[in-house]
Amino acid sequence: MYSNTGQPGVPLRMMVGCLLLKQLHNLGDETLAKAWICNPYMQYFCGQSHFQHKFPFDPSAFVHFRKRIGESGFEKIFKHSVDLHFDKKDKDGRKMDERMVLSDTTVQENNTTFPTDAKLHKKIIDGCNRIAKKEGLVQRQTYTRKSKQFMRDIYNSNHPKRRQKAQKAMRSLRTVAGRQVRELERSLSLDLQKKYGEDLEIYQKILLQERDSKNKIYSIHKPFTACICKGKAHKKYEYGNKIGLVTTAQSLVITGIKAFFGNPYDGHTIEPLLDQMQENNFVLPKELIYDRGGKGSKKIKGVTISIPSNPLKTDDSYTKQKKRKKFRRRAAIEAVISHLKHRFRMHQNYLHGENGTQINAFLSATAWNLQKLMNKLREEAKKICFEILCRYFCKIELGGIWLIRSN
Figure 1 (cartoon, helix red, strand yellow):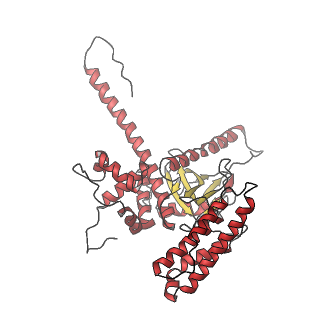
Figure 2: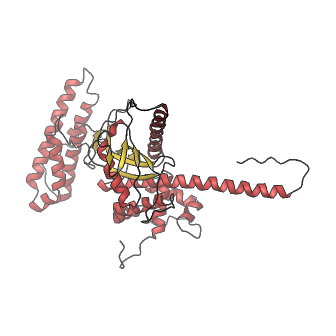
């Protein structure tokens, strides 16, 4: 992925280490550079032998690195974070895993404004003016000041005294947006039409879409954004992409995570996740626990799909209790999703492009797996220190009794 000519690339340990630290500490590309300068532990983790007083490269290099290695590169990083938790292998050399896993879906929101027709039409006008200015085209009118006034008139449109004026401003804004797009299409040459064809196609689709239209566009710079309803009381709709994930039942290590475009049915997200586990050379579990949204196939790729249901007449008390514990354990994945969103940057996707959705999901899952490994190592270090202290104080003969706390 690197060329032998030109300026040497930044070392891989440096780039990957910075990306992992960024997710672990919930930092952005720019804020990581400031934190990295002040923290010698971060510098040592990234392979620096001496304390540095300046960040070694421009933070924009993160963007180029993410584009260079793509989804496949980040999938390798994620796979390695899972391998660190499981050492046992089967006869085929595949990593052994827990026999029961948990699965669920959530929404990774995109970093976009709340979508309204007025906002989209205003962005169409600004986009057409920007293209015309860049290509040196003469416009009859830019509508810069008028479009701003229309946006002011639309504000608080549900108020009885402002409703009529706001509706008129909405219609005018749509008319102006359509006029600007048609004028731009007439003015552009064939080569320029091909160059800006994707933008113009998005503009046309926004102007034509109605309230009941399907596959609507909610953001111009992220047209793959979907409107997803998860039944939350505090947030009826979320604008982003659906993320499916699989975790082990006991250790809660994430073994599969995948981004989906559109709004697929939850039950249809299970098979792609199992395919991803197979591609990463993981042993498929015997049972996958899902909520009631995963109704459909009872068995996929030899994996039994279990969802909560009423007990059978033939179930004895032990079987009922076993099922109850199993489905109660499934609720643990909700806490994992909450941590991914609030601690590991999956609440909003700030990365540009369709690939950014999957890349951000991989990095968040990697950070979660590494955090669990760090907690595990910390507990083992505490035990070792406690044993050393116990042996040391046992050798000292003193009159009193020493009480040593484990912490």
